[in-house]
Image (cartoon, rainbow, N blue to C red; front, side, top):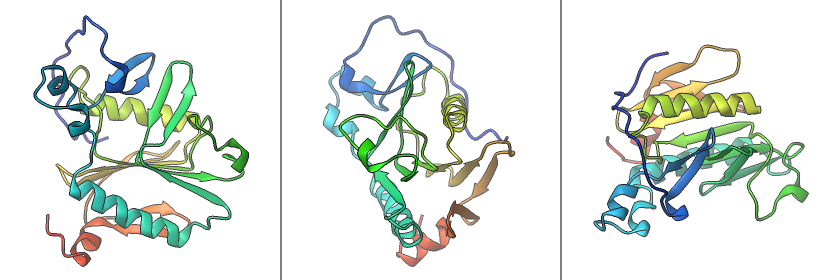
Length: 204
C-alpha cells in the first residue's frame, strides 16, 4: 500500500487530558482531537477545533446526495455528524458517514449510545484525530484494519491535503486513488470527486 504521509517521531504523554478532547479510543488508548494542544495552551477553545472546513463539508454534502439517491431509506440507515461505533471494551471509533443495513442496525437499536454493529460502508473525510504520537498512516491503517475486522465491507478515506482517496475492503489489496479516479460507494453509487467538485464550481 502506498505511503501517503510522513511518520513523525513518537512522544510520550505523561498526564491525562479532559474527556471532551478525546476523539476515539483505539486499542485501549485515547486518541485526542486534532488541535487539542492549542486548547490546552489556551490559544484555541474546544468549539474552535470542532467544526469542519468548508471543503470537508462540501465533499460530505456531495457524497450524501449520491448516497441518498442509491440507498433506500426503507433498507438502510445513513448516519452522519460523527456517529460513534463501539467495537469492544477497548475500541470506540467515529466516522463522517456510516451506511448501515437495517437488518444489522435495526430500528430498535437506535438509541443514545454508540452503534455496536458494523456499518456496511464507512466514509472519512480527512483525519480528525491528533496523530503526532503515531503518524497519520499508522493511525489510518490501524483504524481501517479494526473496522474491517469488525465487519465493515468498505472503508473510504478522502484526504483533502494530498487530493487522494484510500479504498479498503476485506481480503483485497487496498487502493490509493487520485481525486479524478472513480470510486464505488455501493448499490450503484459512484463518485469522481474532481468532476463533482467542478460541477459545483469548486476549484481546488
